Image (cartoon, rainbow, N blue to C red; front, side, top):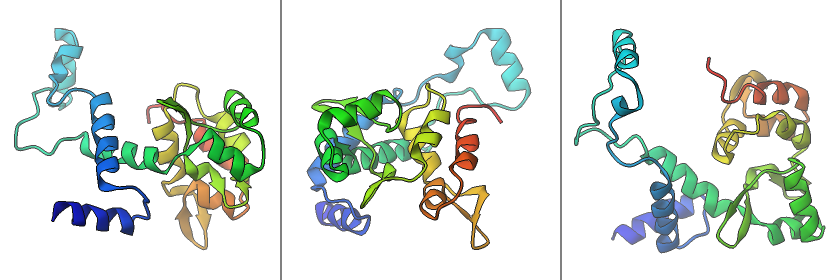
Length: 195
């Protein structure tokens, strides 16, 4: 019964993956994250702990009945991994040789991550006919220390500065609609910067 429910969820989300493969992706993503129930206070000196607690932060262990904060991130990692293209798939889509894709990754004209079996490239950066318009400018602006998942979340989250038909649009929607990539680049340059 659980497998059928998962198959339905995956199908509704448009993910072409077997439940067992998806669960393996989830397990892999969970393994890469911090351990469950970490003790946040261990990362700070006693003076730092006191200062953080003075401003209202709770540095106590996560209780057994609290929802695991890692769940959303694990799911996002799994979906990103399942929907990503291989170098060969990206090359076929763009009509270029595999080496051109690796060259674009090195130049930060495409983004991806190395996994078992080679590079994986998130599909949000592609259209049916090529690369997302303006992607070069946006990726050049993203700070180099930002993980692929952060970039993917930014590109798929509506931004108040990007308005289409009176509604906030995602950077991807903005670029697909012919919006100025420099505006997205300016927003992308702030990724990882405290508010």
